[in-house]
Image (cartoon, rainbow, N blue to C red):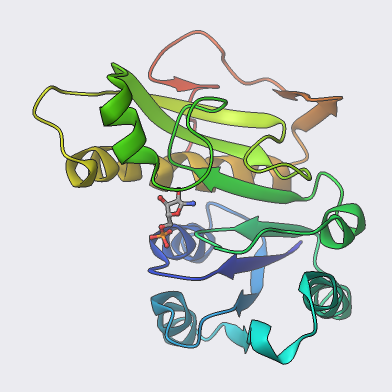
Length: 215
Ligand code: GRF
């Protein structure tokens, strides 16, 4: 199975996916990294691991739809089965979503549906929430609204800053994203409307549901 990753920034989640493939935990190939930012650290990581990098500057396209049509054509050409958004800062249009229905995943650093969008950790702290976490979900046409695959919960502490909370959550992102991708490659993810179930997974214990198996 061939996987494409779309990223705009630091690329720590991308790196975890690459390492999981390299370690043989995920039996698939990460064929391409597509980025909208030339200076994205994710692109350096891709080069380090000999992964094809495709830089697509948004400015060169008339609108979002044309941009996503280009992405779809690249993904088809590369015979991609799964698209992973990993810190990808662009809104994905219906053009891309329809072409890869239930085959685009995203990771978001909150317990969705709470705190979608940007500036999540600051919003969580200002709201006074006592839990936060991370969510891997399929992408639909809304912002962070798609069917949820796996979530991890973390405590919010009185002394937290957005940075300390982000760091606590990122550790779990680095486990749940590779796990969700592994389940996908094993064809264990079943989707009924917006209800996702992972076959033979355990739904019994915190802090991660379904339970981690490999990460
Ligand atoms: C992560 O916190 C992810 O949840 C969010 O963007 C951040 C990307 O970090 N969507 P990285 O580029 O994977 O290090």
